Image (tube, rainbow, N blue to C red):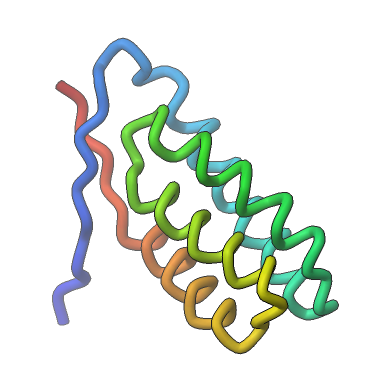
Length: 101
């Protein structure tokens, strides 16, 4: 079975920042899952708002888009909509491969 990867092209100028960026995203998923398990909509909103800003600035549009969707669902108190978004985020991070240009 071949593992699917998602390639993200990042500017070589920020190459040294990406390993820490990715570690922070993994911690972010853990924090989101913890907040979700506690039905902490405020925390979900706060974390996902940060996702919106940081993703795009590093070339990870998907992170920003997922952050937007999670934040909006949290604002509407729609936990049911948040669960699949968290799964997509975790899956995205597990499949992403960064290349530099």
